[in-house]
Length: 147
Image 1 (tube, rainbow, N blue to C red):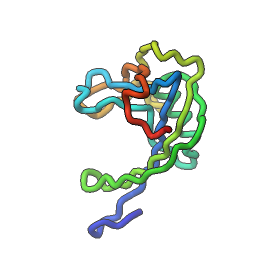
Image 2: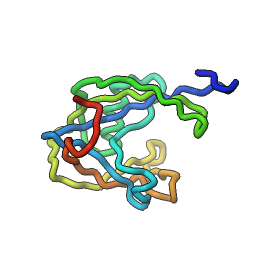
Image 3: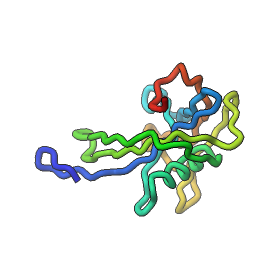
């Protein structure tokens, strides 16, 4: 926890997956939510209590793509102070990953479901669904941390 103007911010650990294949980066957009709201994203999510960042990255990649993946390397860790928007510090663990049988020309729809109910989860933004289009972008057309 970190103090800022007398308020303690909680730290929330996240795993971020940079999936590279043939010089392409896996990205996704959310259906039913404007691109101007969510942007183009990479698979990522919160690390569960007792879970390692590495295990969380593998889990998040599978949850968000419905495909298995492996970590190639740890890229680093960054701390982001989200205040005043949220009273938290995001500690992001970045990983370079690969997906088994990846095809950079493929586009597919995948989404997350709530582990407790099995139902699709909501983004909480304009009633949008987590179901989204996945695709690979040419790596030289995006900025990534992986060298």
